[in-house]
Figure 1 (cartoon, rainbow, N blue to C red):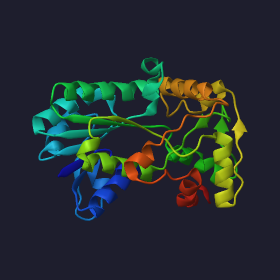
Figure 2 (cartoon, rainbow, N blue to C red):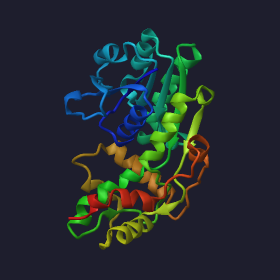
Figure 3 (spheres, rainbow, N blue to C red):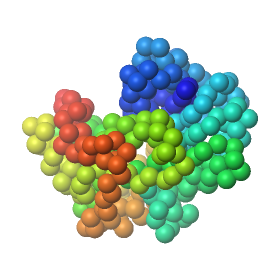
Length: 283
């Protein structure tokens, strides 16, 4: 089996590439800038820009399975080129946001939903099997707080008590490895969560405990937060995040046992993730 792992610079993809290499499975690391990758020994970096369909055919040649990041712009084209290349199985890293009633109207959820639909249509036509991994909040989202915390301040939070279910990237990679290597797991959608529902203040408290440094926050209005991220975050995405946080303000996130079902062990805690990434939050 040969697996193309797209988004090769991403943390989930990097962890998956390590797992595939350790398992002796041939893998390719796809990226828009392959020269910048440092894949495990024996893993070849290839040019695969999910925003440029002209790169798809070469990256897909000889590939049996794909781990695909959700880039909606050319999901239809990717599905078509994967079918033409003889790909048998595509595992999409989607999001549990697609399960929300307003998914079509939320910019964050809508792009994942569009990618899911493109792959589902191809799978329904018999092109290949499609499996959707639908995680909740990535624990790595907390890395956005690293700069202000290292500087001795705190991140601006419009909804400090918004809950999420932070999941370790290693658990996502192990779940992906399971569905890539176990034929019985193909063709389904899997809602993945971390082991606990934590609001942002609880996550900051865990970071403070692990790093031995203060981890405060600054309460801001949604409008103030949106203005602070305007330079690097598209307005629809900012609106989608604010809507999601508002819906989960003071409301615990539902949890699933899917990580354990796929990997054989409970999901790693946020404290474990914080320990693994503690140096990112220290000066």
